[in-house]
Image 1 (cartoon, rainbow, N blue to C red):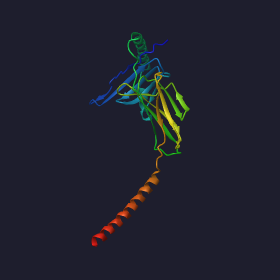
Image 2: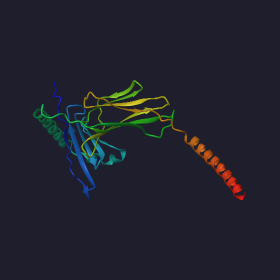
Image 3: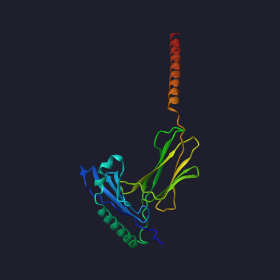
Length: 240
């Protein structure tokens, strides 16, 4: 039976390849763990991720398309990457055995929130974003539901972003066409934990912008007429 207090080993290589006035740094974060994904390697520019490494086919994945021209120089030596990961796995295994029944398993205080990618319009297609912060270990099961019905479930999540405090962040997306009585939820389990963190999202019945503008204009015009009549009334009373 696997030791429940298994170690997730983070190697913030923090190879400061560039440093300017204590403001910007180029670094690498490698992690290995017993759960999926069992390994990860990220290239960071300060707190922003630029590239991730796919250990399945030794390919480099840019965070955004604009980084593609530098894909080949992000991790130029696959043999070195494999060597570092083998060291990480051996060190993690030995550390797990050494700390068995001594230290509790590290956990992050994970926070989950759900919001729309674009301004809400009922009956118009949109994308719900589930933002998952302070993740540790980087092993998630993410379930989207509409009311009680499961829409999607993923237990092999691999799209993690490293943060400056050596926690992780993840985002999950769901395309929806929202209506006034919908209830969506994003359910998150971290690292095989029995606890589930749930964030709900319901439409907030936005007022159409045209109707709002017309209502404000009408209200302003009505108040103007009232104040004008009051002005004439006070002027008349003052003359008497």
